[in-house]
Length: 353
Length: 262
Image 1 (cartoon, chains in turn cyan, brown):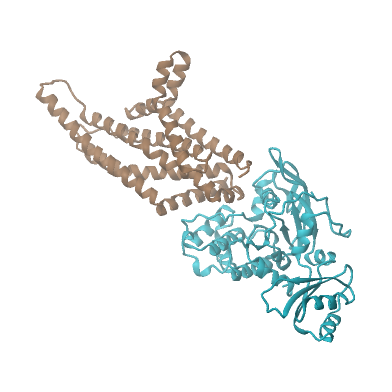
Image 2 (cartoon, rainbow over the protein chains, first blue to last red):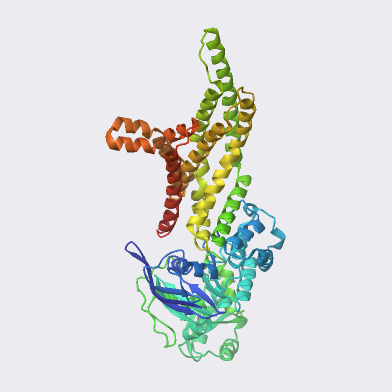
């Protein structure tokens, strides 16, 4: 549905994206992941026909985005970084306007608008002026605007920014429901969002695609990171020694907590390519006479993958597309905590929705 | 073609709707109506006094009072418009750029031309609405004239005002498309208008063929032609050229400027 080949965009002398290549199959949701300033927005703007590329081609539904711009524009719904809203209009009026300029037939407009309102749970706000809506609602109007003409391809630039946790979950549900009928590209710098909503992930850094794969295989390919977190009663150094002796343990790290002095929290990480046995760890603690208060398995989160891919060059197995990474990567953009990073962390360690 | 027309109508309707929601539009209309109303009464009194004075002085020749009145009033209207028009055109694109809605328009299957034409039509319509009460005033006063005033002559003056406004608004729209600051757009439009107003005088200073060329570009000179009831095709062509130039430049600038980082 979307084919991007060797796409580059330079502003003056600075390259925003370089040699970006990827394909999105019909009905798929591709997550575009990268730190701020990595080139996500530029790529999406090129796909939407807003910006011309400096080099390379991008095709949406078989049409070249710049040369056959009008054909592409009819087939995409696009939510830019800041939702494009006429704040003096009502929600309904605005959606009618968008439907009209997107070329929806007069007879279908009413139904399309109603459907978009329903999908974004805006039906009860249809006659409210957009000016009077909160940020979360405005964002939803932005999404409604992108789907009102029922386009085959939907491009969403950071769709969950500015939403509260409940709204984030709703929007993710909405996006998941769009898949199948629609092909979706969404960008985000919130990692769990990708693992929850996307079929595939493209990680972009400094204007280059660093890796594309399914979220699950990206995580499993990174063999470090699996381990356990334990809360134990007893002498810290003795606990450490006891755990260190267990088969396959690479390191035992004491975590800073505000627990009482006689308790501590430790993180046990496994050696590469080995599976830690929870039973052995528990046996080691209990056998030595310590009290075991909590034991939790930690999996590699996409966050780990992301940090590794965007901060250093690491070899990953063949079926992941890996291009060379600039070692001088900036760390300042890696801010997954900006929007629910903490709560999101728990999500990714729990079951993947 | 039908699609383009439908798009123009869509943009036109949205723009008009936004005037109803905008406090600025109400303020502009209020100020315009207040000022033009005051000047209307003022000029009417002045004309009557002048005739009375001429009578007392024993002046025997004919004075075309209605015509003089119309001339003065149209002159005042275009001076007020000089201040009003930049305010009307300043937010046409600047506001869209600021709110990011230009990105919506630029990624919709709608041409820049359709957007520009729709916007210009809407703002000209708003200006026409401002003029409507003035037409009523004039109709009341001029209907009392004896012999009756030639209606085409009156209408030609109003037409002059409308095409003058359309030209200025079109160029103002282009200036508005260059910036996301409405204030800057208003200031630059005002400056450009002033220059086009007095370019006639500049042309006389310069002299020669270049001076003559400048004089031809003058908005005021061609407006006065129409206001005096002279239907000069070259005047109409000049106004049409300004309108087209404004729309053309707007369509181009929207294309070019989105290629910049922003």
